Amino acid sequence: MTPRAGMLIAAGALVAGTVTALPAVPADAAEPAPRPLPRLAWTDCATKAYPKLQCASLEVPLDHDDPAGRKITLALTRVQHTAETFQGPLLVNPGGPGGSGRGMAGYVAASLPPEVAAQYDVIGFDPRGVGKSEPALDCRPGHFASVRPDSVPRGSRAERAGTDRARAFAEACGEKHGDVLPYIDTVSAAKDLDAIRVALGAPKLNYLGYSYGTYLGAVYARLFPDRVRRMALDSVVDPHGVWYENNLGQNFAFDARHKDFTAWVARYDATYRLGTDPAAVEAAWYRMRDAVRAEPAGGKVGPGELEDTFLPGGYYDGYWPKLASAFSAYVNEGDSGPLVEAYERYGEADAAADNGYSVYASVQCRDAGWPRDWNVWRKDAWETHAKAPFSSWNNTWYNAPCAFWPVESLTPPDVTNDRLPPVLVLQATDDAATPYEGAVALHRLLRGSRLVVEGGGGNHGVTLAGNDCLDGHLAAYLATGEVPRGADGAEADAVCAALPEPEPDPVVTTGSTPSERSGTRAGAERAEPAGATLHGLLGHVR
Image (cartoon, rainbow, N blue to C red; front, side, top):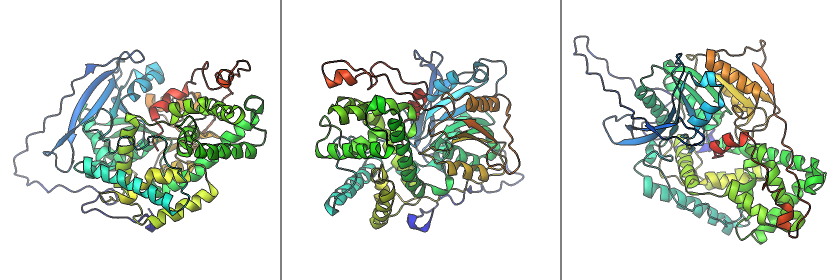
């Protein structure tokens, strides 16, 4: 973090990834009794999609430095190995922070080649504070209820309302969860991973992490390098920018990705009738934003909700056809129905989203220093908005509770590591949520790691989403430990071609009402593409 992050260091904070040394034991001292391993009682929790899924819970210390103190509970899932060759547990994490990982076990086990999945116990888990883990955080239910004020403040009164709202969220977190907030952080979550490893009786663990899960994995590897067997990190957080600087970088990257979307819409003018010039299409989108500011679509979608609706398209282009259909219906036909449907599908917050956001804020605000002077936030927000207006202020308010957080910040550990087996790093070059430079940075910090790139890809979360080349590298690595080796001096060890961009949905040109004419474009008859399942699990928690 740079000095402008206003870092506040808590007493006893982890410094540069060091671990407190235990006092030496005299040679003639009696051997301490071994601590009994916690027992995991797995029960059937099969679903139609994942008939072999099992569930369990595990108690871990709230404070890992006080193992005899208060306990919290982690919710786990498992798909058990079936092959004679058993390679141990494969822990999977969807990112966030704040993403529920219980659904990941079934998905990963079903998406890997069967002969590879059969060699692992695939383990999903809800990190501390998330989902079915207890206690689950929910600081301020309804914080994202529509219609919110415009995310771009027009005057000091609007800005003050935004800071009051952010402060109210931070204060609510302190009032409801003040006893646990000091322990909702990445280092504590990494120690939970090791508790899961112990409970599974495994000397080492295997790990597949997406998005924030890459940072969680890197921190685990720093704390416990000798307990890592294989580690694959997909869509990588830049460890140098945790977390304020990374969010500024996202503002530019998401704006660029939104321009990719409007360029795609322009290429399909015959379908969407919004113009053949990408700049004109983008201008039409901002006119739509102005219109819903004056009169929220369906009484539900104002400018902030509109940004929330289209932001998932920055994570995954499989959503573009339905977003473009809603855009077209609103602009060309004055029909707000598809836009409201798209908001309800992609942007609206429910109770799970309230929980995810509460943990997101708790982890990010605790992990690292943030500016405590709102003038710093204002300056940076307006500077980025001037160049990247799509979501700069929206993202600023999303993170603004950290300016008022009731718990002091820690120092992020240095994740530099030369004690690991080869780590597989996978990244799309045009990923907006975790820009490419972060993968290169982590690749350089993890000696012996290998970087596999999806050239020209813009999606976030690239393995097990339909790219056979990337999936082949992941499967080979999990099966045998095989990693690619690029030419000396090459930045990437392997490059895979990106998946093609989506085709537009078919168009209904008949019907007596705008909704009937645009219904198919809004997605009434076309199923979500295969990659949508993964991106639904990743959840798009920023």
